[in-house]
Image (cartoon, rainbow, N blue to C red; front, side):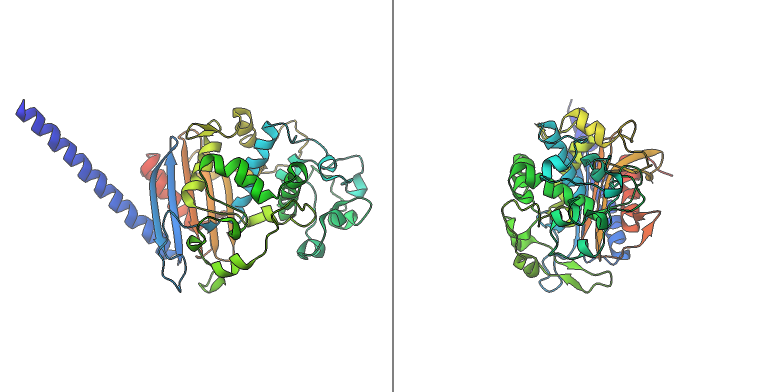
Length: 385
């Protein structure tokens, strides 16, 4: 009996040693990817079957303070903001507050039309698939512009829509369209979009995230952002000085949901679990299974005729893992890189976040993300060459 017990203990010890060695090797490989991509600070988080199975934090939150990146660091996630906003919009659809094919004029309180196609209403489905036919011109570029002036058919709408494109018939990635969805949230709920998302999506999941740095609980943990060459782009002190009106203002808040979300890596992974599985995470239902399936579906008989890779702000990507389709979003701005991808069959979620690095792309996806995803694929999907 003592011999058997001794063998069991020895086996357990060997397993622990092997696991530790594997983790050490993976840490070294991940760090090497961050170094090769000239990363200032970064995070790589993997979840599987609803649980965090790996996380690695690299570099500094800010070069001047030398505070290391940790699980508490807030990163700006650039265009992954759109996917997170999409989860909030789908939740509103589940609750009957929004419908994907309702004319958005009903939400905004004025008639939104491309004047050349008065018979075709603009819908949330179009905005969230980047097929509304919007133009990002000088009006959009000016932060002082008023949304109703740009969209109301009785004002300057003709300058902000493509002349020869019927809404729903052409794919063109649109920051403007993503921003309009935030204005719709405010028009419908009567709350500013950041507060609404914090109250209804983030807080029930124990997530501290916000579209404005001023709303974060621990601002000392905000990461600075850097240009591609490593020079400073925006310090946390600058972010905290930016005013944010905590009340509904659809006419002026149409840029909030484009790319401003600040969130921690583990929390972004938690939202990945929501869309990777059945709409729940940690026992909390966030979305209906039908909404999750809709986010992962291709366009069919839904009025969207072009081959848009996006459905409800979720991209379908077939080249990240061998023979597997992933869903998610990519974000980049100057040197920032953020990616959230999920692979439902294996229930794998990967999060890549940096506050500054090289932003080279391989077949549309950031090179740093492809290299880190390859490590995850080998270890957690068993695709060893």
